Image (cartoon, rainbow, N blue to C red; front, side, top):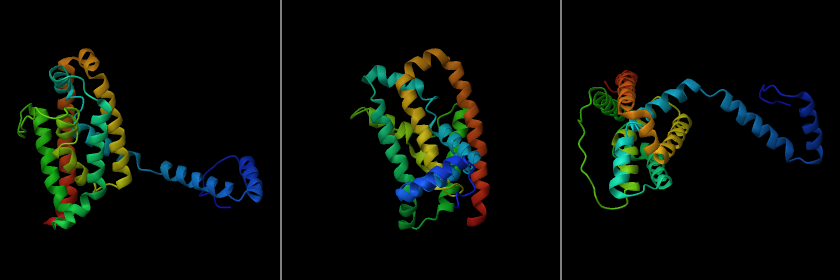
Length: 232
């Protein structure tokens, strides 16, 4: 039997093989689990870390804690699960259907990645220098758990552009996992925003914001270099 070179207890394999003679369903299920675990073990963890940190820096949920607290005080309680769900829905929609949308309007992924790298670079400049280059209007109507928390605070233009830009260099599975990990953090921060603001303080938040700003600048340059040869 071929178990995809995954080491395990041969006594256990013997028992499973004997059981499969009486129940033919057991062995295929076991082999599927082994192959799945083997695939995960071979996953490029450095790529996952890069995607996770890129999205974490662009979403900047930690740096948005003061905004979230201010919205909570002005407009009432924020539904953390609702905001996380709708922001995740937007990000995953762009991940799986963004390519089709670009093809429909005649734009290739590499060109979009170049444009996205410029947007990421500008976001990094904002975070490092503490300036506001992108302007967004304030919407005082509607459910604030969706507007402006889910969009555009979490899944804004920068985040959605970054997701499609990352598709030019990383597998969809890696980006999907990176999004899920960030959504877990988003939910936790939304739940604990007031507590985190008191514990971390404005100076700590500002330092983190600038550190991730420098990280974004480096990632933007990397994405630009990886895709410019396909366009020029």
